[in-house]
Amino acid sequence: MFNKIKWAYPALLFALLFSVTHQSWCQESTDSLALAQEAEYQDAPAYADNEYCLRCHSSGYFTLSDSVSGLSRRQPMCDNFNIPKDKFYKSVHRSFGCTDCHSAEYKNFPHATALRFEPAFACIDCHGGDENFAKYHFEEIDAEYTKSVHYKLENGEFTCWKCHNPHSYVPLARRDSLTTNFVVESNKMCLECHGDIDKLHLLSDRELTGVIKKHDWLPNQSLHFKSVRCIECHSAQNSDILISHNILPKDSAISDCVKCHSGNSILMGTLYKFRTIESRKSFGFVNSAIIDNNSYVIGANHSKLMNIAGVCIILMTFLAIAIHTFFRIRKSKK
Image 1 (cartoon, rainbow, N blue to C red):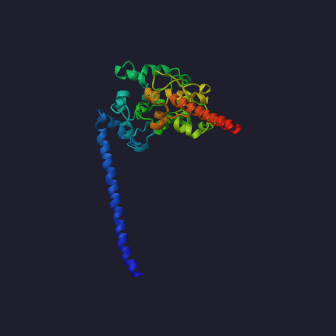
Image 2 (cartoon, rainbow, N blue to C red):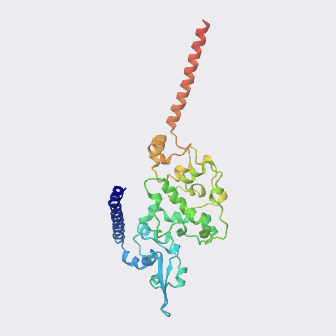
């Protein structure tokens, strides 16, 4: 018994030392990572100016002071105005300064209430008519968007930023590869409102209908939600722009399985639009189902050559059976 206790003390001491050392190492690693990230942020052109705003808007808290009474109080930052640095400096607008889009009056704190009603820039305000962005067809996107049920129902109050947060937006569809995360992140834009009654009521007094229940007619529903974006069925197709922005009324949504699961599947012109169309034509089933199975759609991915070969094999099999049967019958008669 004494020997067991004698050996227990060194073991306990070692465990304590290891725990302290491990915690210290983890803390140092975390601090090093934070410093590396901060150094990366400092490369942004407007970093110094943005720090004035982000010291409150990225911390989740701010301190409100009353110059008359001399009192001050720490308040939580509303989620809608909380801008995490890591998301902002990875976004498409990372090189912008806050006052490039917001009034310089925001440098005064507390902010004047009137600034809350300051009109927000739309995408077309900056990107329209700019040759550097011509390939993205912002003018056509804007024209399609004004046809959208969102624009019409909300009398123009539904802006680009309701779906594309300007402080964290990353253009997913311009990436070279399609992943499940691409679909999930795209659908998340829709579910921000259609899955959250509080956010929906910022725009409309309509009741929130359960997304799962409304789509229970879909076979293998979970797989559809995982692999297909909402806009594939809920928007008008336009071959001139990368992402359709004309959201249709719910009664006009596609509910015909054949629209997707056929040789002329709409998914090949929407979800996989950024893929090389010619490569799909050249390799057909092999390219889509084997080389790149993320773009495989049941009923849509098939090669005409393989279809013909398959039919020939079946016909030859029946022909062989017929010939064999003919000679067996002939031999039996002899």
